[in-house]
Length: 234
Image (cartoon, rainbow, N blue to C red; front, top):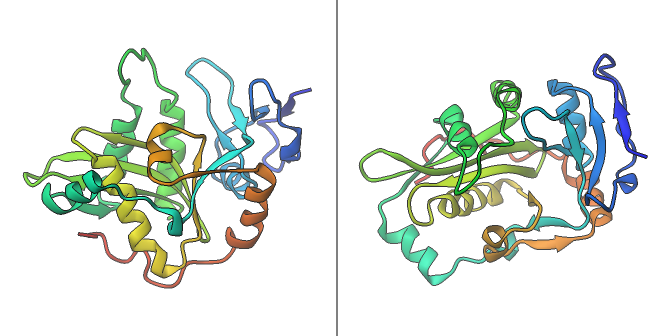
């Protein structure tokens, strides 16, 4: 039976993640709110919100989990050429709201987005408190052409969404995120669910139990000082 989270109880606990449904895969709970405290508790346990406008808040913990380890990063020849030759400039936390807005824009034949105004406001609060970050890819002319955003807990980066308006622009942002943070102790990037995009970069499918065990080790272990001190990464 799907667990219900009381939005009036800020301390309401999530059920164990192994109680998540098999169909739809990973659905764990419904309800609650997107308060900062609840979101941080959710991420710490490998749970994230994902729902569409007009739906109640749905909480997920899929099995298996798509995870990208720094040592497994795969940079293809074409991506390496983009890194070298396209004149991209990569920054951190220079344009959090524009990145989230770009990620929220409907793509292809999509009519809506799961990044609702409620979600945007919640992650803006996390960003203001230093928990959420954006990575931006800029063209030579200063146009925002790609990027990503997510939540950082300890040595784990929980990726939320990416966008690209130019070739490889989102992949460049992810590569630079890993290259920048690995010397400061980055252990893994949570990609949530498998996609052609993240699997092409070397993401692996990891059993949920192994993923949550990694969180027990790394989510409370801080990065070395200075990881986010520079806004310009290239």
